Image (cartoon, rainbow, N blue to C red; front, side, top):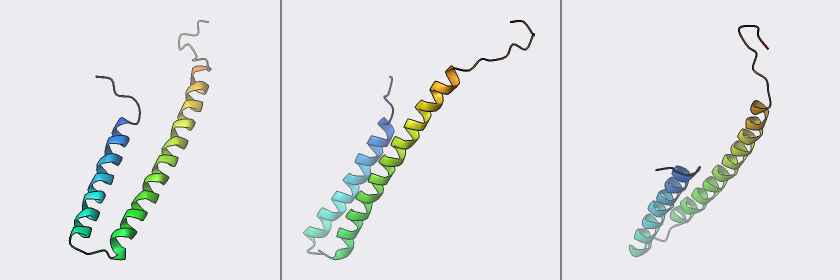
Length: 81
C-alpha cells in the first residue's frame, strides 16, 4: 500500500492530540481545572504547529534539491561521452 508523504506525521499528531484531549477531559471530570492542564494543551498545540512549519520547510528544501540533482550530468567512469 502506498502512503502519501506525511501520513505517519499526521497519524502521530492525531494520536498525540487525542491522548492530550483524553487527559484534559479526565481532569475536567475530576474537577481538576488547574492551569497545568491548559498549559499542557497550549504548549502541545504550539509544538505541533512548529513541527508542521519545520516539516514544510524541509519538504520545500528537498523538492528544490531534487530539481538540482536531476539537472546535473553524471560523469562516465569509462571516459566515453
